[in-house]
Amino acid sequence: MSELKWPFLPGRNISIDRAEGIYLYTDNGQEIIDAAGGAIVACIGHGNDRVVEAIAKATKQTSYIVPPWITPSRQAMLDALADWLPPSLTRVHCTSGGSESNEAAIKIALHYQQAIGETSRTQVIGRSISYHGTTLATASISGHPSRKIGLEASLPNFLEVETPYTLRCPVSANQGDYYVDLLAHLIEAEGAENVAALLSEPITGSSGGALVPPDDYWPKVRKLCDDNGILLIMDEVMTGYGRTGQDFGFQHWPIEPDILVGGKGLAGGYAPLGGVFAREAIGEAIEQAGFQVMFNTFGAHPAACAAAAEVLNIMREDNLVQQAATRGDYLSNRLRDLFSNHPHVAETRGKGLLQAIEVVADRETLEQFPKDAQISSKIVVKGLQKGVFFYGGGTGVVRDIVCMGPPLTIDEPALDRIAETLLECVDEAIAEA
Ligand SMILES: Cc1ncc(COP(=O)(O)O)c(C=O)c1O
Image (cartoon, rainbow, N blue to C red):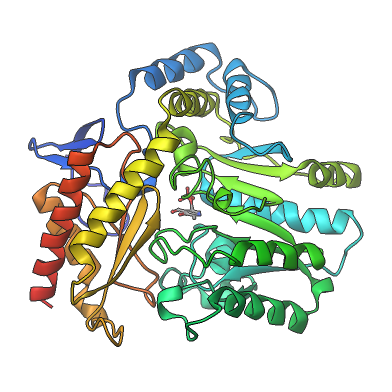
C-alpha cells in the first residue's frame, strides 16, 4: 500500500468502485443514490456509453492539440453549443473548470474596459453569498468566508454587495428593490466610472443553498449595469446546462449576460471543462487592443470537448432540460409536503433540480444551531449510511444547508426516496444537536 496521503487533508474516506445512472457503488457493494450529482455535475447520469465512446474516439484521433487550434471534437462541441448559447454570445474561451473560467471572465471584463478606453474601470463587484472558485482572485471575490480563512492578507481586493436572501431579508415588502438599491448605492459610492463588472450566480448555488432572487431583481440589475457601463458576468458553473429547468439560470428572467461562465454540467462530469462565452463586441475590442487571452494548457482538451458535445446532444435528444423542470417541481413539492410544517426547517427552495433546505434551531426567529453542532455534515453522513448522497452547503456564515442536484435523468420514485431519506436524516441530526 502506498504511503501517499489522499486527500491532502484527511476527510471522509469513501471508496467508489463504479457509478451507473443515478447510482454510486462503494467497494463493499453499497448502492448510493447520487442526489448531489457528484458536486452538482452529473447531469446525464453516470456510465453513458455514447459519451465514453466519443471520448475514446477523440483521444485516439487527437490526443493533445494546443487549445487555439480546431479539432473534430472541438468543432462538434461548438456545433452543439450553438444550440444552447444565446446568439449574442459568440466568443468562446475554454478552460479546465469553473475557477479558471471565472478567473478568465474577470480578466476579459477588465481587458474589455481597458480596450474601449474606460481605463478607470478596474473594480469588480462580487456578492456576499457566492462561490466562484479556488484561485486567489476567485476565492477573494467569492462571498464564502470559511474558504478565505488564513489567506486574508494576500487576497486581491474586490467590491461586495449583498446577495438576495429573501428568507432573512430585513424588509418584507419590495425585497427586489431592497437588494437592487444596495447595488445602486455601492456603484454610486465607488463611482460608476471605476466599476468594470458584476460577477454573480443567477441562482446562488451551494454557498447559499439554491437562493432564488425576487422576480424583479435581475431585470433591474441588468438595467443598472447597462445604465452605468458595467458588464454583467453570470457564473452558471452550477446553474447552467439544464440544471434549473432552463438551458441557463438567467433564462428564468428576461435578461442576458454580457459574459457567461460554464463548467460542471457542460461535460456532464465525464471530463474537466469550463467555458467563458462573451458578446462579440467584447472579443472584438480585446482583439483590436492586442491584449492576450492566454489559454490553459488543458483548456478545451479534445477528450473533454468530445464529452461536452455528446452530453449536450444527449440532453437535447432526451429532453433533459424540460425533464429537470418537471422532476424539479416534483422534488420541490415533495420537500414542501415533508418540511413545510417542520419545526427546524426554515425553507425549502430552488429551481428545477437544484433544490435545498435550510435547517434552523428556531423556525420563528431563524436562529441557527451552534456551528459545532455541524448539522449539515451530520445530515450528509447519515444520508450516506442510508444510501443517499446529499451535498452540504453554506459559507460558514450561512449554514445548515443541504443541497440536492441529482442527474436530470432521475425518476420520481428515486426523488421520493431522496426526500424521505432527507427527513429521516434531519430528524436524527437534530435529535443529536
Ligand atoms: C457557482 C460556481 N462557480 C465556480 C465554481 C468553481 O468551479 P471548479 O470547482 O470547477 O473550479 C463552483 C464550484 O462549485 C461553483 O459552484
